[in-house]
Length: 253
Image: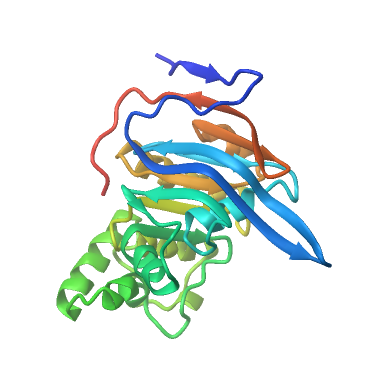
C-alpha cells in the first residue's frame, strides 16, 4: 500500500506540528557582502517531525546550505528562534552551541572527514571520547555501530584501506555514536559511484525506517526520488514542499 502524498498549497505554510524535533520561527540569516546585506534565510517558518526524512533542495544561492548550517548549530540565526529537541538554541553562546552539536546532532559530509591515523572503531568512537565515555564502553558502542553499517569485520582498518562507500559507512556510524536527535547529511552520496550511492541511501532509509530523523541537502535526482519528504528553497525562503507520510516508525538504532 503506497503512502499518502501531501502537496503544498500555493501559499506555503508548514504542515501541522505533531512531534517536531526542530522548529524554526521567522528565522533570518544575513551576511554583509561588499557593503550590501544578503539575506541567505529570509523569515523561514518551518518544523521537522521526529522520525521524518527530508531532502532540502534548491538552486545555488537558495539558502539550503545556510539552512543546514543553522540546523547544525554551525551558524546562529541573525533573527528569529530555533528550537532543537525542545531547547531554544538560537540565543546560546558558542560554547553552549558546541555542547549541543556534540550531544544532539550527527553530521555526514560528502568528503567523509575521517581521521586517517585512526582505525574504523577509533573514528566511530571519537565523539564518545569528547562526551567523556570510558575507552572500553566507547569501543563497545563503536563496534556495535560498525556492525550495524556492515563493517564489523573491519574494526582495525584505516580509512585508506577502505573503499569510498565503506568510508561513508564509517562516517554514518560515527554520526550515530551520540544517538543524535537529528542526522544531518550534506550530499552524502556526492563522491560515490551510482551503485555505492544507492547502497548508502538504502542504509540511510533503513535508519529512518527505524525512527531516525534525517535532514539531507542533495542535488542528485536519484537520491531525491528515494526520500519521502522534499523541501524546496529559493531566495532564502521555502518555495514549496511535498510530504509522503510514513505509516509506521520503530525505534532508532
